[in-house]
Length: 427
Length: 200
Image 1: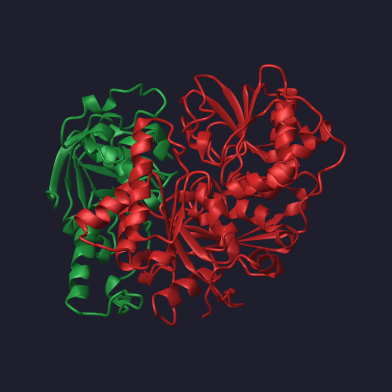
Image 2: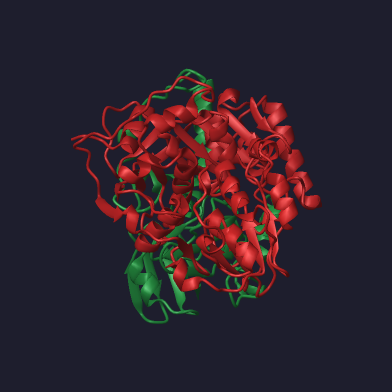
């Protein structure tokens, strides 16, 4: 019996020839990540409770200041300091200071730290993002991270794999975000609970790495353990000049066993939004167009990479944000911010009347810089709209792609980008 | 730390897909290292629960939830906040995987039982036998069986979670039981068993 790529990675990492769904394995970890909310508890557990003095390999750990940094209040400053001191004491090679990294899930791929064939864990649920680069990547807790940092290994249950096949190409204005929202709307927020989502098919071949990262990023919104894609020439082009280590891609065997396969006609997928209060409460744009908005947030590890900002800027160029609406633009890394500066995108956002902010998680998790008040309505390029995610439990959040966000910021209501500009933006 | 094997308390009911932002809103992540403080704000994000829920909890009370409990973020402060509020264990139709992992790793008892999640009503008097995986409902005179977890997970929960497990492994490492750093640990997978359901 053949294996899926998820099974192959877990088999290799646990020194076994074969694993099957349901097996519990102890696996070596190739790369681990923690941030300013998860490193303080993980570091404390590792050192004070587990009694480990060092991390197993300081070159295989990234520590990123991104959630509540630059410190949003006094308590966050203490977490930032603990994170900084842990990285210093442990000699962590990949420490990203405030102003130098950005959101962990953008930083790790762009710095070539998470590679094909690898087993990657991060103490953050959106660590599944990295799977677009043909690795097994999953979110873990702080005690898990303490275990990994102490030993370089962790227990896993080998997941069943669900296969998602996307035929044909996505239509105009329809992006990776729309496709993954459409999938989550179809299978539900627990539709892939604890399972692997393997994405395949014609549509992916025409999607750039950033659109792919958006899709694997939201595997967790379907409850999945990981999202994964095959290695191809898009992967290779992305990794050229970035990869920090040699790597070995994996492919699923022809006779690999899938629990179930889902087939989609990508061409028929509409621009898709998630309505309040759940990512699976999806609707085509026609159904929600005209909904009045108080805030538009373009940010997060889901949809604020350079191609996302280019698409938004092309629509906002020479236009103004609607009276009374606040637009917040948050690049997902400082590298993205530098590119945006070089390409003149920041100027576009500023002159359109948007608030350009620094690269952090910010309002996505109701942290800072755009937290919503009671009854406020927000259209956001982020990943979750459960009650209270971005602030008050009575705030209403719609999830959408960046072009829809930009168009809606101009009109003050949910708007098809084609109603603002004539043609889709080539980036 | 090991937990008592028989727990008794009143049931507090929650629905399906209760996510971690409802269990403990992200703004309280600044109290990550303070279980008591987290406990004070447990379940505050559930619409209609405008704070003060944890004050109603008597030590030992039991949470009963629907499917996919604890979905959303990876924050370990979700089970910690529930424990900090005085809840002795969580019974659910099903758990989201990171919440499930985190609970096992903390040695915090969770039980998966669709039957119990369906039948139990708020305020019911319950007794949970962790050894047997049996949930008794004194109010309704019912008894429900929880789905068994694989041996490795049960052992982890019983020994108090991942901390003592890692301590032991580090001691083995120091004693030279296997080479350090353990980049190539001896495969123990067969001893860990298999799991038909559940998270992890």
